[in-house]
Image (cartoon, rainbow, N blue to C red; front, side, top):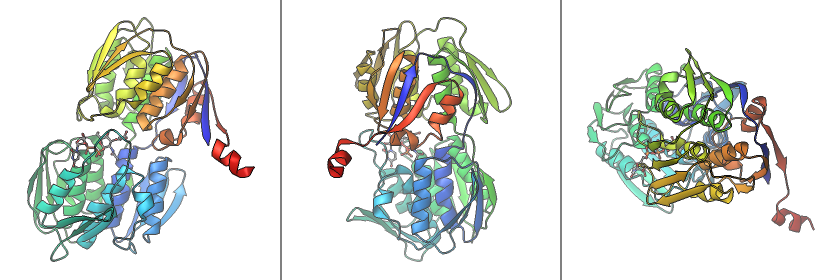
Length: 430
Ligand code: EPZ
């Protein structure tokens, strides 16, 4: 079992380079299934969810070669439909993109029901509604989702999503990109990763327009060809470092970012009193005076991202006054709150509303990373408290944060990763 050990209470200072966006890399990597050719993907983050996705695709017959630290060559020419490993697929949410990708390439799909962070019920009814609208039939059998079309191709149509959903928007793009006719998605998600995936597919010869707006038009093409494509920087990783710098009253430059993608996070930090300076592809975050409370509501892009809610909460425990976060995307993204309370934080969760009383003294403690963003929030809190905190279940943080320990160390944090045999292993060894 690996743990992160943090001696907190030091401001983060220096420069940190942001990696490629996990949530853009996932659909793009699975989109390679649509292409019977080599795709060179650059700016790929070295995180667990991506490495597991490579394992899934290799197991299906893909050739994946590492070109350098952040570049891979993916060739899915020989991928076999329906051959993904059940146990790997069910461990990550992003694997649901295999449904759309297999359906788009083979006119059928067979993939295990997806996993991912536990935020309460996370249905995929909109994905299924989309596949059905494209002329496919969908059944669930023995933990698998099985999709088929009559003539081996999806058929273009108009699809209106009942809610704004990132996953279903991308899945319908993947399923229809080589389908017959034209598909129009209405009430589409507008996140930067939707645009990135559409740009990748267009670089492969797809005809997608409107990505980034709430209406996306996909004109089916016969086939896609390989291309070289660089993934956009991870706005949530960047936002996490921005919150960590503010919470520790530090001064950091976050490089390799697209400042436009960070606008909602920047605006909230400025409201709190943090100084944020924008450059072409970097942002400097510093704290020169006292910070004050604010209210946050999570919303689909361009609103404040739900994936920044726990990190914002960790910051708000350190500022004057009472702050409120309203979580409008997930029913239960609050498991991290118990960990912050373990440190002494005064936080109340009522329904989807989190009320944070700031500047209540907090102390270092043994902590658990309960999920990806909850884990980073707990780590941010540990960085703010003097004394030693130990965080377990760090594989959940490593699902989405590239070299988290190395990057924080380079910003002056007293942090290390240690290996401790867990009690079960000790018993076995005896
Ligand atoms: C993506 O999840 C991200 N995951 C999540 O990031 C992120 O929290 C989420 O988008 C929202 O931005 C990946 O990109 C792999 P949705 P996704 O479909 O696609 C409901 C992180 O921390 N819904 O936009 O699963 C759903 O329950 C992760 O990096 C349905 O009801 O999210 C949720 O309440 C965690 N039916 C809302 O819509 C559906 O068929 C938005 O979900 C689909 C979604």
